[in-house]
Image 1 (cartoon, rainbow, N blue to C red):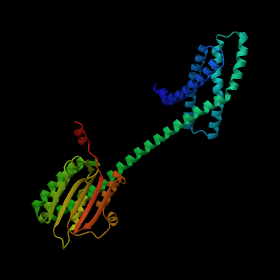
Image 2: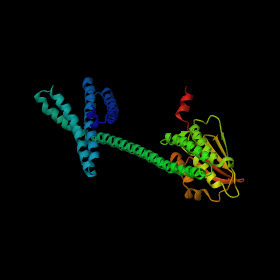
Image 3: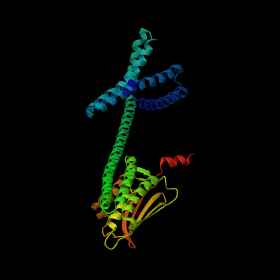
Image 4: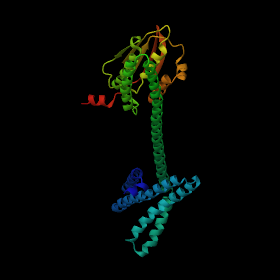
Length: 371
């Protein structure tokens, strides 16, 4: 059965059989009308048997044609040769069906009537040659349309799978860019504390170990639940506060029922890193960072405000300048195409970063809703 499926597309054969069955039904009703109202005297048993036999023979013939067409597709036969082959079979279809019918009639025909039957068959073949040609062309057109749409769907499916693989590979590459960037900055912070405060540097190393364990557990996930992202963020904040002590304060405001919303993995850390790295100056000795995460219609809005040194460059320039923001933008673009928004601007002595993207709940949240 498996070997048969390789050569015969049963769905296509079903379509061809159904189409020709509709033709046979219409043709039968027409002839039945002529027999009833125009006095044609023909045995109804032979009439029905003839139509059923014709449908079976055409179906068998079209199985052969479907296999031939598929072969021509695979072998990429020249167009002219394909036309010649189908022209030949378009005339052969009538000879095939009438020849089989004549052969069956021979079983109950005397030798004297054989010549007359053969002559009638030739006349019948010539009379129906145009109809058989149109039937064949119609069925072959269906075959080519079927294979064309099937090939198109398979091509689109391969394209979608390829795009998905490329997107996943792109995201993994961006994450490998981001994790070392974040790690090196943290290690630099620990290094700067070793000579100043040994106990704090030890605490930061322990916190960094816990943080890296969490990050590595989620390294292959492009999207994680917001509550998981916040757990990682809080460990990161603890490292930052250990280093900067009273010079750095954080507040986090998260709207209820958003814990299971999916967010890009490590989306918050680069922004916090930028706020603490570029916010300090001779004028700005302390920095306050406020993180607000709320639902705005069907989108999630992440807003991070920080005091300190304000930015003097456009978002376009910032995307070209550093790994952190450009990494965030690239990941958002890969995950959400054009359905996201990223803004960085100054407002009332604060630097504000806004990220907006569609809300998507995790499976755990969906499961809870249906329990």
